[in-house]
Length: 153
View 1 (spheres, rainbow, N blue to C red):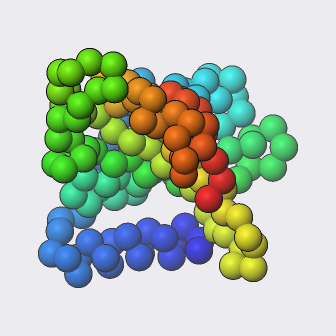
View 2 (cartoon, rainbow, N blue to C red):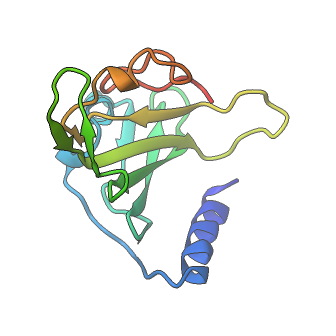
């Protein structure tokens, strides 16, 4: 799926559901820490102006591997809402804490249908409170750590 197809599909799905589509600009500091680091190091170039915002999902473009061969990718930011933002019981205490913030998903511009694996990266470092053991090392998630890429899906 190329950039135009993905953007068109995103906008078409939104309009079909009766949602408004608008663009949004965010601060550099709102990006996941690993994306900020690669941009500061000159190996990637994320765009802080979105292609579209529909409901709680916002899609941004990013060029990766700038030193080798620029590769277009997409970053999708999901704002947590209920039930995702409902309070949960921490494994460490008996108190409940509401989860807030954003999940970020980094995906390639296109994927080969014949391939058995399609790499995607899930960033959790913009969640408050930070993820605890329920996100780390528990199947089917494998070993996911705060700010670390998720296993290939």
